[in-house]
Image (cartoon, rainbow, N blue to C red; front, side):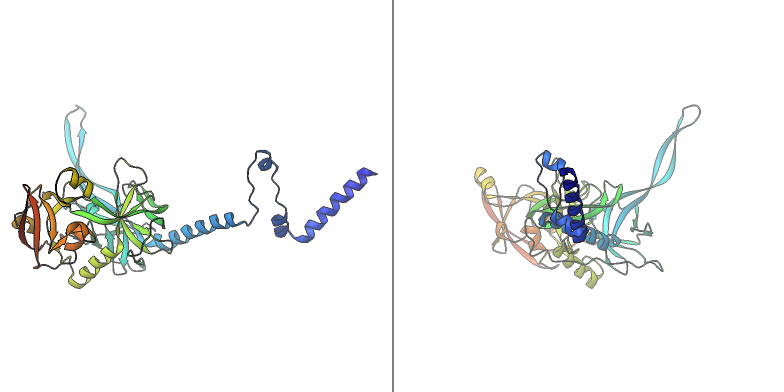
Length: 381
């Protein structure tokens, strides 16, 4: 009797839940015995936490699908001598052309303009290609290298039937630490269109960029992020959750984990405007590599705060003004370098070729005044 009653009750419950509908029943009654057995917190289907995870996933998926067609892989083509041995083990050499992926870039103009890092295309003796997501290869016709920023513009010729889709450039003036970001690039020069995510870890950082063999100025005001940026990601876009480019990935900290850097896109937009107006990077170059001395370092060494000159470029405006390695640039045009937004590089970026700078330097325990006339540096093609 009791058995028949229990069977009838079970059938009644099944009928009720069937009538409620599968989706509603799932929301009303989600039971996972193993989760309860091991003390795991069970999130009901459709809970706020599950929706949050799904929303974040959808953001990344949408941005990747939207922007990836505008992201390109930069490959180098170069002849190199390969050592070979004949049947008598006598060495000889033959020349063969190699091509390998070395970096990333992104399309900024449907007419074939692509932005990447200058250090990605620093080999003047090599030829370069770019490869789009659909594996179409384009020969790079011209390269314009910025004498100030670690920036280069590549020019390719569009192919009939293949539209080049430009990215949307965002605004880097109102970025916040903790802001969600997405990076796309050719990680390790091998894995094309790798998508990584993270947050903005810091703003206004200062780093030295370059390929180790060419002259490079200090880059100030760069974005720090924990989104995975590996060798090969250089020149790729750092994106906001809306899919707008807010930075150009430029470097990864040696010896550190999850520490990458990107040039703010507003600086790049200024360079692009300059380039579109003049057909070249017609900008002044001061010609020093330096590092900023903060208050604590200055006090410990009994010197003023400012820009400590590490290297002076031969033939530059700085050298002609008499600035030497070891000098500390304290003020420019009456403004303390430590208080100038964007540092020395930021100030030079606001000047024009032919402008003069009144500079105070600290040398040998004394302040000296010098005048520097800003000159331009021709962009390489």
